[in-house]
Image (cartoon, rainbow, N blue to C red; front, side):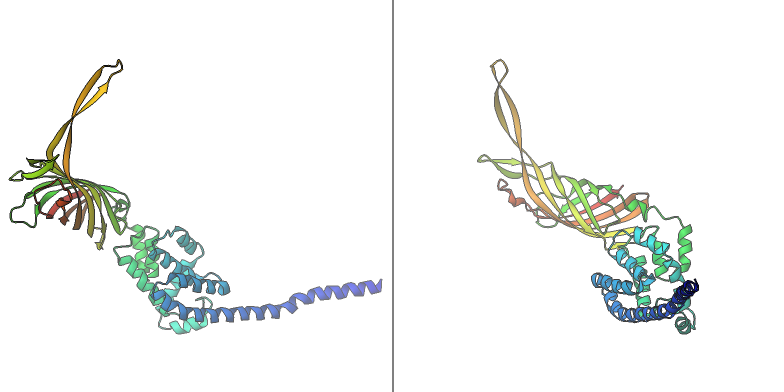
Length: 382
C-alpha cells in the first residue's frame, strides 16, 4: 500500500511539472515567431513599395500572402487589398465589411494619430507589435494616402456610401468621415448615374465641302438609348433622321437602265456611338465619341410590281405594290459632347460632330454628292 502511494505521488508531481516545464518552450517559440514576423514584414515592405507604385496587383497579392502566412491577416494586408479592389473597380462590400469587423479601421485610426505625434519614432519602438512591425510614417503609408486621395478626386471612380468613408480614412481625412455620414448624397452624383437613360437630339447638319452642295443645311432629330453614366465608357444606340433641304437637291438615279431625276425628302441613320468620359465632376460630363450608322436616303423613286395569286376557289387575281429605292451607305461620325446636370436623371447637352458619308457606294447614284458634313445638336437625357 505504501508503494502504491509513492507511485501516485510521483505521477501527480509529473503532471504538475509538465505545464511549468512547457512555459519556457512556449515563450521561446513566441519570441521566435515574433522575430520571424518582424523580419518577413521588413523584407515584404521593401518589395511592396515599388510594386504598389506600379499597381502590379498580381505580385502585390503574392507579397501580401507571404506576410499573412507568417504574421496572419493584419490591417496592412487588408488595407492594400481594399485599394486594389477599388482601383480595379471590383465589388468591395465583402472586403470592406471584413476590414471593419476585424477592427482594422480602429487600428488605422490609431496609426494615423500616432504618426502625427512628434515622438512617433519612440511610440513605434515601444509598441512594434501594435503597429504590425510597420514603422510609423513608412513610405507604404504615404502611398496609401496618395492613392486614396486620387480615388476621391478622380472623375472615373464613383465611390458608394460604404466605400467613401473608408477611402477618406485611408487618405487620413478622418474628420471628413463624420461629415459624409451626415451629408445627403446628391442623387445626381450617385444614384441617378447608375441607371440607363434615353436621349433626344435636335439640331442641324450642314455640308463642309463642295461649292454647290446637294444637301444644304438641314434640320436633324434623333432618339437614342444610352448606357449608365457611372461607367467611363458611354454607349448610345438609336436612330437619327435628317429632313433634307429641298432647295436644288435634285439628283440622277439609275433604275433598270433608266435615269430618273428626283430629289430626297429625308435621310435615316440607324446605329450607335461609343464615347469615353474625359471629365466628370458629377455636374458636367465631357466625352469624345465615335459612331457608325447605316445611312438610308429616300429617293422618291419606285417601281410598280404586280404579283399574281390564286384564291381558294382556283380563280386568279393580282395585287400591285410599289417597291421604293433608297441610297444606302455607311456613315462614320466623330463627335465631342458635353452635358450638364439639371435635376434627377435629367441632363442637357451640346454635341458637335463631323460625319463622313460616302454616297458613291451606291452604284445606282449617278450624281456626285458631297461626303463631308458637320452638325451641332442640342440634346436632353432622361
